[in-house]
Length: 219
View (cartoon, rainbow, N blue to C red):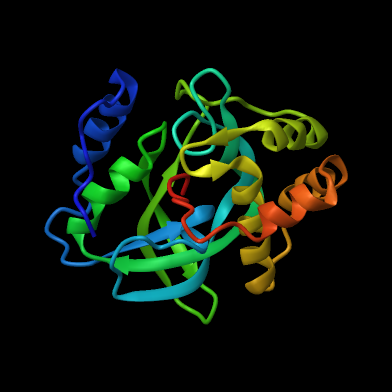
């Protein structure tokens, strides 16, 4: 795992990293559980000790966060996943047991508005532990907020960034959730709208991206 390049960060991204690095909740811990609900489900570009399907209660996944650095640009942001509070909801994903050294990489990966939050993580095969999740709340500058799922799909269909087409991120996430046996009506509805918007060739290319994709970021 290479060390992140801190050069050419925007002031907002640099401030986000600085806030995360000041979090001392797990100082002194040799290992920490990290919960992922977006690209972290299927793309772990960092060393980990253990990986387990898991969930967190009271949160739901939504494509309400803008992506200016991975799946869009500052002038034409894409849309990526965050989680928002919802009573009675359960957000399914993947938990990773990592060492504190990994957070330098993760803080850079999630720099576009995502902050660390302590949360209870429930493992699918039983047990619960306190760990961390990265969330992008409505106070961050990249937050786009709610929109009709068709409009979200339209924005995703036309967005591209350094990590590739926005549609690729959505389809990877939808497929990863299916592989876990999980249903997410919001994600799957956007996926269905996207399929109707794209030509068969576009949809196939997004579903089967080239191997040099640099998919990263967005929890």
